[in-house]
Image (cartoon, rainbow over all chains, first blue to last red; front, side):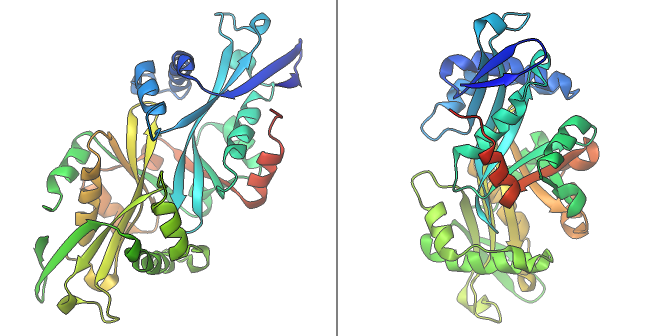
Length: 181
Length: 181
């Protein structure tokens, strides 16, 4: 439990590793984030898929959520108001790494340090990881400034790394072209 | 086993999931790739670390290697001449994904379809993944053209995604700033 000050009240925030029953809240916020990122039609995940992939034998991801007390619930009645979804990756230069896929706080709860709290908690999860990485959209200046202020490097600017994606037909074609075993 | 034509001889290439004893070859090629990427001082991984992290209970990565027959070994005597190192990630929009961290073929074996063979084999590994993603340096035109010709999207160009990294001091500071449990 961590207390932070905001303008109107002392807001207590509880950060914890998500449980199956949090998947509905996470799915809801994934959609809210897609709307913010101006790509609402891209988010297709259901809370059932999150449950399946987050609670299988070798989970594909882990997630921390931020919860406020019932008295501070959102205007729509939500108490789970932010999440950080992450997984482990691997650098062939440095070894074990963490990738923060999504970091989100509901608009009415921003400015209370919850985003920073989630990010720092994710950084703390696995100490033997030597990197925490993530992606940000170029027009999202508040987020870019936030990461830069915390000492992060923008590797697209400094080294020229670009994201490449195969999906749909281009991925099917790769599979079809694979050499026979 | 897959046969491909090249200028001088019929080169047979065998693709397989790496074994512990391949880690020395993979570590050697990781260093060769870092030299090609003009960042040779960045690669710090040892074959012991690859063994530890690739063969633990929940491995941090998987790897396919390309092997040629002894008669076609490299001028330095190597028969393992390429690798594709990958792991599973997660899209909160689409679900299970594969990330191809490294794709490398030794210079003297390029032009024989081995890079494409490795990439297609990786794409085939896990069919329920809906994406194959990777990163490429902006000045590496041969690789960028290769991916584009296969139908990949450059998400940095088309949507504006940038890579952000915390490591060293900036990562230590995040951990230090984490809210108390």
